[in-house]
Length: 450
Image (cartoon, rainbow, N blue to C red; front, side):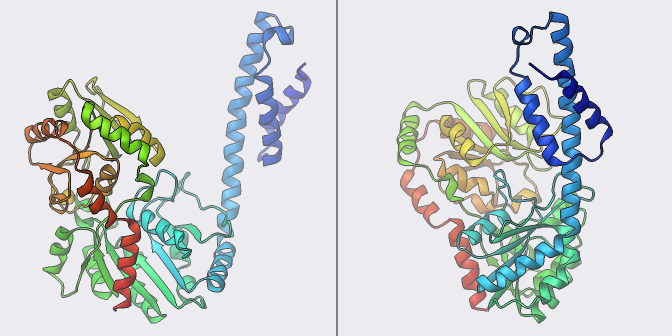
């Protein structure tokens, strides 16, 4: 039987106590979960009393969730108030255990199973080589989601951008025994760029990684922090400057006397398929399943929703599966042959994409997208998908890629690709030279020649 007196006492305690400790909340949640398994006959309650009991349980769960959130916030605040203690412990760990250390100033969010950005991929490759990385992640002021975690004695230490900047001089001047200290500036944030010369003075190598056209992001109300002067300063003062696409190199090389090296994006080995899947893919090419997919960011700043809707309307016999985050709230009433699944992990994407024949990139054609080398290109190819994209100069000569310059051409290229066989050998050769391990090797080689 349920101890109703204790349940009422717990409810009153939850209502009046602030904050509640985690141990109590965990025990209470366990008790509530066990109560859910009772039915009316076990309890001997009448229908009316049982309904009241269920309503009461729902109130308890809502209150419990609120208290857990409050307790979590307090725990995080305590952690962040003392973050320097953890940071110094980490730097001591690095100094004692590694000859090479990388400070990745990423400009993107925390590393999670859903992360797919270039700084994340480079960080994960470095860690796989037992190279410690201090990873600074972006968060907005008063963020309630992007908190730092307690360091768990591994090579990765994730720190929010505000805390990284508060401690940047401590990091730069810390007496590390590492022979190679590398600061990777993955976006030209003014508050970080101004420290480039100080990094160099204290023996760090500085790499500026031009991974996007930040000026164009700024013009579409993204990257509000952008300042052109700081980007050019970053290019001129860094030891090594790399870029993800030839259009980005062309943009800056015409204005500054600085060598910029092409280091494109690459493939995450998580997307490499096994032999049994390969057999399935070959069968799929014979059967020509009529599913088309996309995964990635869905912001209307560059994802062309009008193009996708037009294409789906023109191709009613094909089904389009869309995976990703940042779905614009104004996008609704999609055609019935478009389904949106939300964000997915690489393993989930591999499973879902087994029914796809084509991966699409319906990006708007503008200066922003003209500079892009999409990571998803490599991942589509690893999933043995033919690719139809709106035109981007960097990808024109990649295998199994067709580029369109209009909505109608996009539709036509999908029809053509749906009836073509996949060139496995060409793709295999291309991907073997385009892994993230290749990119890290290239960066280290370029640095060694400086």
